[in-house]
Length: 114
Length: 111
Image 1 (cartoon, rainbow over the protein chains, first blue to last red):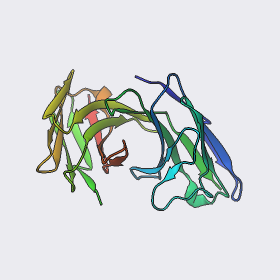
Image 2 (cartoon, rainbow over the protein chains, first blue to last red):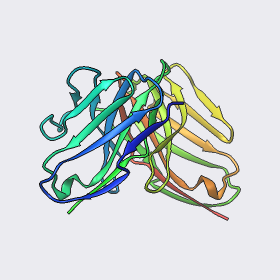
Image 3 (spheres, rainbow over the protein chains, first blue to last red):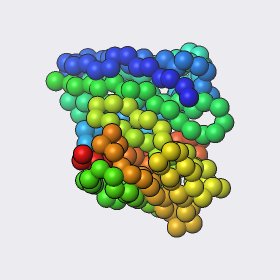
């Protein structure tokens, strides 16, 4: 199975600032995704990270707030822009390897916005 | 809109018990269903993947079943151990590998 690493693992940020989360996979994956897990909640899909093109966002998420890059098949970034306390969550990167449809997840990046 | 519900929300059992976690989904048009484990403050670990054409999958002490027509899946854990304590999440693939997650079952296995 693919090993997915995320940086930072956690951070405390000030309101109004932006933070970029990096996701690195140890092998090529066909698809990559970004999820959010708000405190006490389950996971919600933010967007599909498309290689070399704009990400595809789910309802309720917009590019200005969550710009995403995916320059190659093993790396992606998610930026949380102009943060507010409501953005305090765990952000998780996931990827699909092969054609089974099985998704693997990183350890997550826990953001606290003061 | 696909909705996924897990029952019970929390479960506490003594070590050695066999247990069943339930997952239900509202739209039977799924491609597959995946069970995950999440330890506190950690990411997700994939446990089992069941394709829509399959009825069950087994891995060690874990067995997952799928009844797509009734919108249900169960995760059976045999001979539970304290190390099984975690939150268990089911997720359905609605297409293009997009997962809709359930609410989770928080399991505590006491020695």
